[in-house]
Length: 163
Image 1 (cartoon, rainbow, N blue to C red):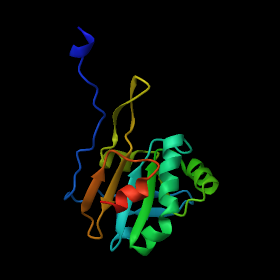
Image 2 (cartoon, one colour; image 1 turned 180 degrees about the vertical axis):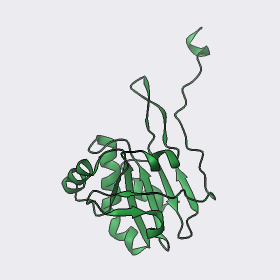
Image 3 (tube, helix red, strand yellow; image 1 turned 60 degrees about the vertical axis):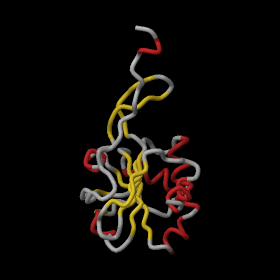
Image 4 (cartoon, helix red, strand yellow; image 1 turned 45 degrees about the vertical axis):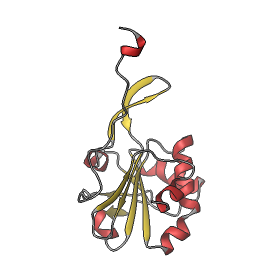
């Protein structure tokens, strides 16, 4: 098979879309506090999934949301980051980068699977399974307003606010 005939790799994309009811989630954050979807009713929730604490892209995304957090909070947004890292890893990451929002430690991957963000992806030509960086903007009514699959890591908060 010629190179041009090889099927082009397509990164996994969630099946959830704007207008869908946001799947319920619950779990502990970096401080051991219990979080769940209903705690954020009445606010617009930025529920963002990222592959790994303290990696370049994930740090850029978290810091973008941190830097705009006061504005987001004043505009009735809440922010929750999610990865499969444990509470201890999240605590270290949040402290190091002074993150003012919770990070859900989804070690059992319940939210990751419910939001359909686990799947094939490619890095440096290698195909593997992992968390596909995705952000869900969930309205105060629990309905997904926006699904962002092309996350701008460095300017993510502005990307969300510019919707």
